[in-house]
Image 1: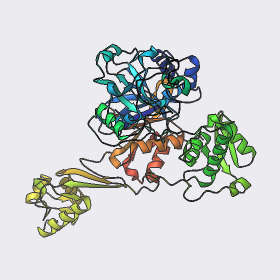
Image 2: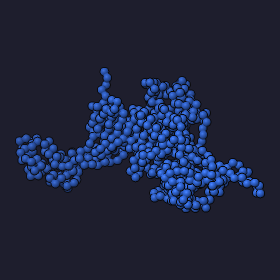
Image 3: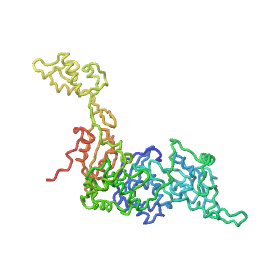
Image 4: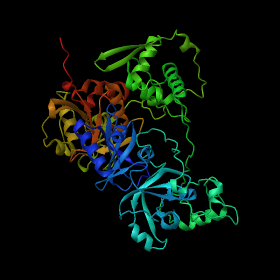
Length: 576
């Protein structure tokens, strides 16, 4: 489902009532979760976002994220945990175990077949295929690691699987490690968690599992119907690869293979503190996006996290500070930065002390420093709008050398009319500001009486069809009719809350998702993207009256001509 790229239609932060409803839905969908589990999954001070995404086959579904990591997605009115959620709570749904070699086929888009499932030996008294119903939510793990690597639904019930004699599908895979859902909000993929092999696959000891010949035999609960190495892994031999190929049914699509990372580092509190300070110093000294003053929350997400080395994962909750505020308070007390409280609970970094010894001693090689994102729109070329006209049958005689369907600009319209008037001696002898229309020009002006120059030009333009061309640094857009300006409007929603609505951004070659992020970071407000009924382009919604900020962003950064932006009068009036 998420193997191919997905498109985000909207990204909104949930309200308290929506968050509570989601919490209840999670507890109902996964009864094994406790109150402590749900509190760990949904920390009170962490915002819960809901993304409306469109898959490659135009399926629309909801994805719920915490700290930009997806935890649950909703499909066909059913909640599915992501692999990240299952790494924390592996016992909330049933898991099918498969061989390591099978994973490469799953990442290529295949479903899990019954022949590829590792099952307990009958002597363990465990059900061979569990006790699941058809279409029940399940996940897949590997014989050497019980961390989830794929999520889907059971293709058939456990009873049907027992009767199938290892033939047919076991799990329809919807989501797997390394797909586009894992990085839906742009964060890099995490290394797969290490949780150890499934309990029923673990060996007690060599003596118990392999008693001496002639000695007393002992039935062990972990006897399996597969041959294993001493560490529980399956030997990587040509024979096992052949078996894996035989037990997997490939689905149509790309033949790309994503390889799993099976090692993860567990940073101690001290190491995590060192990593936090490293990212902080790197951000204040080398960040390409740091602009003061900056909100402390934005500083962490936009400046500190990009400094973190690719092989490590910065988790502030695993530090001795636990939260960002006490850490920045300590940095402020040491004199590295100046922090000011804008309003209750909202702090900004207003200055960096470049004379501090720690600042001066910190150094990163050019290779380690953050690179400027090539996709950033910082140096966006000016947006050039060219309005033109399409020549019709009635005006062809005036435009010598052109045919019906050709386009001409307004400045050329004036030149051709002047040329036509002079060649046919149509200028009024008594008043040079007037023209005496004849033949083709008389038919266009619908009169043979003297007409002013400007009126003639207006009549000729009206006899043609409008067209336009918009050139930007991203693309070139052509269209018929008059170019629609970017509309900035303010609407009042429930609770007397104002929102800014922005229309026609895409018409000017502006990527609406990038523009939404600019607004989020610039005014610290949530945004959402939707397509109003009957509209050709998506509409961007920004919380609060942000008309002035959006107007300045469009004119200063995106270089949109001011005459193509309407609605500046809706900006908040300055208080006297």
